[in-house]
Length: 190
Ligand code: ADP
Image (cartoon, rainbow, N blue to C red):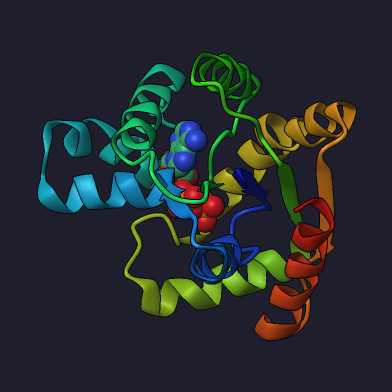
């Protein structure tokens, strides 16, 4: 089984790259951001609960995020493994994932980290905001998401580096080139 995580600041291109990887390696793809956007679009109870939080660029509380992600993984256990995009995003989420994986007798095979500097990120997100229709691609929210990333999510890189499964990849370049570099890292651990 191949169970992967993908990290990177907002706008690093995680979603694009992750979907291509999921297709190539036949992995179940889970994006907590996408799950929340679907729930908001449906107007479900969960969607309504998280809407204001997401709009502001803040994080949805850990207990909500952990519960929905675990529920989705359990629903879809067959296949070659999974690829998580946007989860974990805090140390408590990472710890919860470790406990969940142990309970389910699963292992994280590798943690991909797409590296893109802040200047490039801000440029990309503002550009994306012009067409994405996403509530949180406005300047205020982008600023918040980057701060949240630095404070709460970036420490996870060290968390996984200590465990020995961090795979850093340069996130600047054209999409296929980045994809290729990600595949090189994955093929090393397969
Ligand atoms: P981006 O990486 O561009 O910010 P995502 O689609 O991953 O986009 O996430 C969008 C928003 O969804 C986040 O800003 C946050 O509010 C919420 N979200 C997604 N994943 C998580 C998570 N693991 N924990 C808490 N909130 C999350």
